[in-house]
Amino acid sequence: MRIGNRLGGAMFGLAVALWGTSARAESAERVAAVPLGGSLEAREGEHYYGVYVPTRFGGELTIKSSEGKVEEIKGPDGAARTNGQEVGEDKQGWYTFKVTGAKKPYKVETRFVQSGQSAKRPWNFYYWPTKADSLHEPWAGGNGRVDSYDLKGDDVRVVAPGGYIAPGQDIVLAGRNGLLETIPSSGDDATWFPNLYDDLYWQGPNNTLFQTPSPLLKYDQLFGTSARAWEAVNTQNNDISRWPGHCLGGAVASIAFNDPLPAPGTGMTKDELKALYAELGENHLNHRIGDYAADIPAGPPRPGPDATDWKAPRVHAMFETHIRGERQALLSNMRAFPPRGTEAEVWNQAIYKYVAEYKSIPGRGPRAVLINIDVHANSGSSLNGQDEKDRVAHYEYSIVYGLDGRVDETNPAAADWIAVGGEALFAPLNILQVINSAWAGHNPYVTIDNVRSLDLANGGAAVARFQGKAPEFLPVARYEAGRSLPNVGGTMFASGADANSVPGSSRRGGFFGFFRGR
Image (cartoon, rainbow, N blue to C red; front, side, top):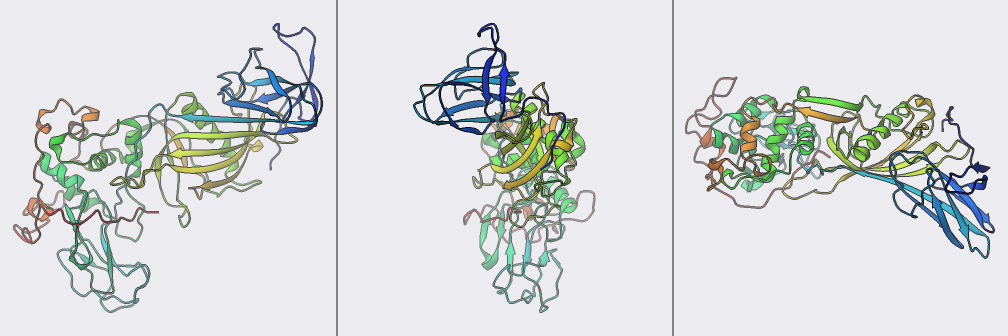
């Protein structure tokens, strides 16, 4: 662990002379210093004690004695405090108290916990991967051979029939229309990935038909656009990676907008409406950033010197200043999930809450503290009411505070980022304060005015057009038959081709399980 300079203050384990204010006795009171988050053992008799709270942002200070009573708790300003309650803002400094009535040796201990939460809780969202559905070798229990010979529609074969293949490797990919039309033969498998450019249904193994979200297809039919086709042609990710998607747009939108409520005449679900906001927010050039902690090395952090240490003060200052102080959620690329995530993965989510426990560090001044913090972010894998729980990452680091009660960022060598845990494998890449956004994604057909007109919670209540009965939506093959591919030329489907091969209004089957990129 690194030892910092410029700590100042009295060292723990010594008797500290604390001078009373006008509300106290005029003479100095002799007190014993109790470590923050620590204890003094084998104490006897009636004594005054002091504990130092380093942060100006407040928290709950709890004092316990194994015998007798804890009395006369007073803050740096001399005002009385209630045990176990908030100390208040701008109240960093020494807190004194008295233990009385102890009949035998006792232990005195303190605990300090600071929590912060944004005024508005960001809503959960789905990250809408850019990888289209694929036919592939089973991840487990396969025969290691390509068994599917037939190819339908504009699907693209990437491995020849009969050849040997590794578990999970793609065999057939969706073509430029974004829809996997080939049905796997026995021995192969297929996986549906929820995409922005999905059809009304997905035809899976054994010709089973599943209802699927279809945000851009419905949007097109409400506004007469070609957003789905544009997305399918221009954004498909054709490698094996499942994590690339729209988590940036979803995370920023979850901070900026109210929880969406589709108007009854739109025929859209809440998930589909959230998907449109995710598309609008996915262009990183359109977000103006204020305060930030950026370019944080992945680590993972470990005790002692490593590349992440010097970022710990900046990270904690972001949490205290904005989540605790301003009650504002922050945008963060929190990197990969355990157990198999990689450093390159991007998982943007909104951090809106934290709970931090402070402990003084033996042998260092009272403004040097060890912090164990649980950081709560919204879910980026929420779809159809599944996976609604927070993502909780655990960080442990030591930092130093200044006399002003703010994290001392002038001496990063005094910090040590010790560990990460919970639902984190690495330190986050960044933690950002989003000041404002221009809501225009890469897809030219999706506009903020159109999207908000669909949403009763974000300005759409006055749009009479969407207050009536929802339309009957057509499947892709029927709606896009004969339409030109935007910015590409050609058509998604020949006019009338396959238009009636699958019933457009079919709603059979349950909601198919999806791969969430973890």
